[in-house]
Length: 318
Length: 298
Image (spheres, each protein chain N blue to C red):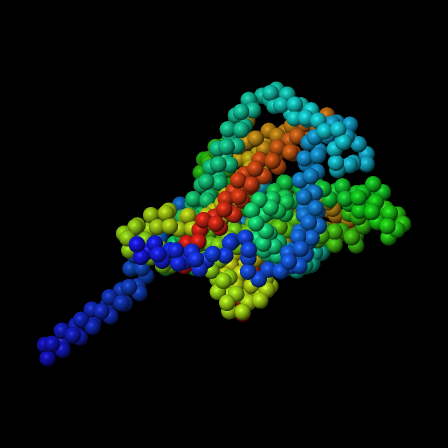
C-alpha cells in the first residue's frame, strides 16, 4: 500500500514537473540566454522601427500637416483614398501591373543569374558577380537610360530604330503615355539583380557538395535536374528571403519613375503608389495623415502578397 | 594512426578535382557563356559610363550628342576635385573621418546585433519567438518615407539629434539583416552546435566560434548591403553641424555647383561608385573563398 502511494506520488511529481515546464513563466526563465541575445537588436528595433510604424498607422487616422498638431478624422483618409482620389486608383493599378510582371521575372532572373555565375570558377566568377550587380551598386545607375531614351534623333534607341527603318521619326519615349509603363518595367528588370541576387550567390556557397555526388548516383542526369532536385531544396531559406525582398522592391517602385518619367508623369502613366505617397508626403503637400494612409494600404497589400508567395515557395523541389 | 588511414581513404574516394563538375555538357557551357556575355554588356553600361565620364575633358562632357566612350582621356577632373576639396570650409579629412565612423559603426553594429538576435530565433525555442520574427519580416514592408517623420520625433525625444548615434542606432535596427542571418543559420545542422555544448561551451561561445564562422557568406553579404546603405547616407535630416557630416554630403555639395563644376562632378560620381565597389570586391572574393575551405557540414 505504502509502496503504491510512493509510486503515485512520484508520478504526481513528474506530471507536476511536466506541467511546470509547459508553463510560460518557467519557459521564459529557462530561455534567459536567448532573450539576452535578442535584447540589443530588439530594443533598437522597437525604438526605431516598430514605434515609427505604429505612429505612422496612427497618423493615418488624422489630419496632420506637420505645422499644427494632428487632429483625429477617423476613416476619412481611407474613404477619400478609394472613393475620391482617381489618381490613387491609377497609381494602384500601375503598381499592381508593375509588381505582377517585374516581381516574378526579377526573382527568376536573380536565381538564374546567381546559379549561372556559380557555374564559373575563380576570378571570372567574382568579375561576373560585379558586372551583374553593377546597376545596383552604381547609385543612380538608371541615368544611363536617360541617354538611351532621349526623345530626339540622338537618343540611342531612336538612333538604332531609325537606322533599321522600324520607325520614321524620333519617339518621345518618356512623354508618350503608352510607352511609359513598359519602358519603366524594362528598366526595373535591368535593375533587378540586387539584394536577392547577392543572397542567392551566398546561399549557393552553403549547399552541401556531397549532395551533388549522391544525386549523381541516384540518377540525376543534367544540370537542370540537379537545380530542381538538389540545389533549390537546399537553399529554401534563401528563396524565402529573396521573395520577401522582391515583394518590398516591386511594390515600392518610385525612384526610377520619378527620374525617368517625372512626377507627375504624362497623364500619370508612370504614377505608382509610392510616387503618389511622395506627392502628398514630406516632399510635397505635407499631408502626412493622408500619406500615412497610403503607406498603410500599401503595407496591407504587401502582407497579403507575401502570404500568397510563401505558400507557393513551400512546394519547391516536390 | 587509424584515423590517418581513414582520412586517406576518404581522399582517395574524393579524388575528382573540384573544377570538373558533375552533369555538365560542353554545349551547355558554351550556351551559358554566350548568354552571360550578351547580358553582361548591358549590365556593365553604368560602370563603363561612369569611368569614361570621369576621364573626359570638359569639351567632351558637354559634347552633343553625348558619346559613351572617352576620346582624349585626362585626369584633369580629379585634380579639379582636389582643388575644390582643399578650399572647403571644414577640412576634407574631417568628412572622411565622419564617414568612417558612421559607415563603420552602422555596418559593424548592424551585423553584430542582427546576427546575435538571429541565432536564438533560428536555433532556440522560447516563448514569443514567432511573433518577434514575424514583426521583423513585416517591418520591411512599411514604406520608410512615411516612418521618417516619427523616427525624427523619437530621435529628438532621445536627445541624440545632431550626434553620430542618430544615424548609427537606427541603422542597427533594420529588418533585412536579421532576416538574412536567420535564414542562413537555420540551415546549420543542430549536431554542429550540440557537440560544442557537450564540450561545455556557453551559448555565447557557440554563437561566436561555431555559428558565425559557418555563416560567413551571409554576414559578408550583409556587410555589403549595409555598407552601401550607410555610404549613400548624407545624414542631412539628423546632422546639423558641418563638422559631423559625412563625405557623401560634401561630395554632393560639390556637384550642386552646376555646369561650372561638371568635370569635378564626374570625378565625384566616380568616387561615390568606386568605394562601395572596392568594398564589394573584398567581401565578395571572401564569400566565394569560403566554399573551398568549409567542407565541414554534415
